[in-house]
Image (cartoon, rainbow, N blue to C red; front, side, top):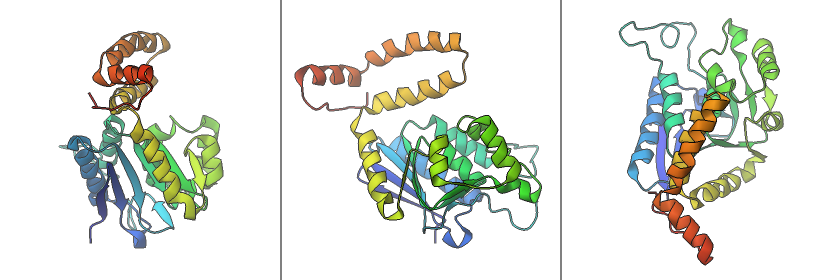
Length: 259
């Protein structure tokens, strides 16, 4: 059975980590499966959103499937190809032109928390726990630190890393790691509602907006001002912007072309 399932539902690509007996821990095959499905959705021209979730109700992703020792990736480096597969997935998710929504069906721990943080939006079941337990085995969550530093307040992040203790879904929401917390029974409905909302707006606005969001986040304030001065006129010249303004004037629903 495939470790990653990819299914198109309407205009949504649903990607499911399918290793419930291993608490949906990831390895190179899982990361490759997620990446392949994301690329398929990006290049299809018909998808409007991506949902990333996992099988079962216990775990969204318990982190890397590391085995009993710290051998192999990501603890060793091939000098001829030093790129880490998880970092490459994070890069792909950031540059993905579609909104990526995490459907957090259970615990998100270690690298699984990093995958969650790399998603644009997240809906979590209220029984899920979130944490970085790496210090319990003598390491620190270095691979996911770039994602967490952009989401979690510094003092709280340091506490999570140093104590290795998980936090609740509600606290994760208060910290900005997830957007919505619901019961397990409500998880699908709330995720579907969020997908419907992001799929109803201009795909061009989302594509250029995600690019601008991530670009400006890494700029100085002055650089961000200059970038914004160029981005808004560029967006206003798109077909979707012209359609959106026209639909607003004519009080009708916009018909988006994604151009």
